[in-house]
Image (cartoon, rainbow over all chains, first blue to last red; front, side, top):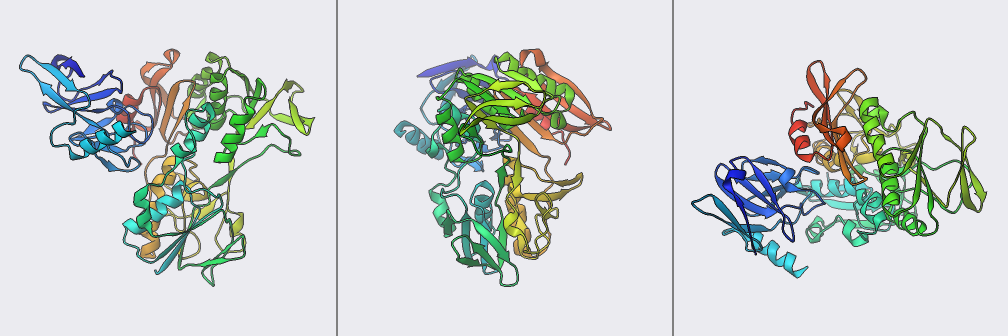
Length: 119
Length: 381
């Protein structure tokens, strides 16, 4: 499944919450676009409402932080990664989010995806 | 330090155990818990558990990595005393745990309504409490919640969502006015009515009526509210009685310095039971966040044998009620000016900042998480 948005709606520093079976948060950090599951793995909170610092997003509820590149939690209270999703940015500014396809190089994202599918 | 006993096996106790190992303590570690369960998370008890959308397994705080704690668990055995001369924690089953260091994390116990025990009257603190209340909510349609604080509001919210005829009784003129100030507390109070929950303020409970089983709640002004179920959300008292005679100073909580050290060397306290000194006075912060964040500081000081670190973060808590999320950080004081900086209270989505001497002292948000995360960063400790 592919969800699309446009860079016009996602300038650097912006976040979009993209509806899907499981909602996805799409971040533009200095021109790099990252997509992760929107819901914190700790408790029900929307990471698209979180605080982005560098390549980390901090959950607005309990300050768990996740690496946008890998989905890995970097501090408590989250202990499980969020899924990452591969992103393609086209020259015309179209952004494709490949839902369920882990972002390249996100080792933790692959593991998280497998765990989610197994659940 | 060769042995540590953590007394209390909930959020703060588990955090202390993890902090001990993370900070290099490799001696004998014992966790003592009054409840029979491994550590579990309490906030969902008044939310998802009451609604039936979360079960016991969803509450577990431990994960496989906690096997690395290599701790001895003494669950279901309350501590009954502390002998500081023998460096020993006495347990209800007559045994003792010898330890050079002690972390007090025994939490708090819910206040109960006065009078003889009656069926149908509930408190909300433990898994068993939540299960019992959830079961009771199917027994009759009329619920009276005593206390309009966060536990009361969350319980009432769940009752309303379950379609029950719900009344909240609050002794103060307005719930949460002490925490939020009257103006913002009024906005939160409006959430009850919007969900069809009656909020009766300014009158306390005189007594519960019924024989064997509660039938009604009689208010101080004489009104009688028929009730099938009563929920008491009237606060909690620190579970510190077991420290009587131990030399550990207790005054509405275990008296601690700014780093969690008590009046007895080698004994620190964390979480709901602990009263820590802060720049604004001593505070017993009965918040999930304090239970998460204090242990690393207290453990560092315990291992150092001196107060080398203090906990200075502004307090933070949240509440999920009536479909919105309330978040508050910082400390409000009388005289602070408060203004809504984003959103609209009438729309049940807004953020407000409390200012004192030109600086942000506290932040409140109702369903405005993104603004809250940003504004919270403007607070100074």
